[in-house]
Length: 323
Ligand code: SF4
Image (tube, rainbow, N blue to C red; front, side):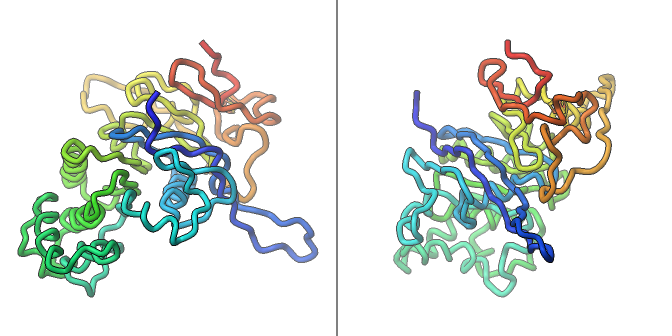
């Protein structure tokens, strides 16, 4: 079997909460609570779930923008979990991030050539080669070289996201972690950016971790999909298997809300009761039991094991039988 480009084992991120007066025990917000998955070279792995499920925190730990509390991260077989800044620097070229909000993620006082060129300076590209590379990158993402002299406010949302993508591509990364890259954009622009990401993947053999709350967006771009709920992975499968035959009640509910483009086909919407509980005080047993229409007593007492129930289809639910 080929070595995955990225592998994550039992990754956790706990944030300590301010102790209550007279309380001896330290409490934690368990933002990510034991997540494992891998991404093969050249594939797109979609990570989905409602806001607050821990998917963005997972992405930030992979980028080493945040230290994991526990667990391991491997990049091309090399463990990167606790590398020092000087040890991780040469590897940083290999993984880059595209952020959600192209308005907030670009410095409004910097010209596009400085935004796109910044990673080239960090990674010490000679000055005389830089402008040529910046122009090349702008063309790759569908902008014009003369845009290099402009400021971010002179562009539309979609164009700004193209600038963010050009910046991420600057140092020829292998892995791009895209955190809700199209959520802030109009639907018509979303598909342009998704198609651009797909074209770039083909052209440069890129690997993506695509983080989003919108399952229709994830379906459009992913090869495999992981579904997170309250810091844990509850289902993981190939895209077609997950959308055609979701097994976890949470995934079923999320998919039931995805609109079907054919007006003749109707899907029964599964409405979940209540809000997502606080990760500072997660429910006992299966953390989804407070909202699950099928919850039984065992669900309140025992957390289900995340296991392979069908070839390459993993689920954490007491009700799902292994085939
Ligand atoms: Fe629902 Fe129980 Fe399955 Fe959790 S383990 S998803 S509560 S049926």
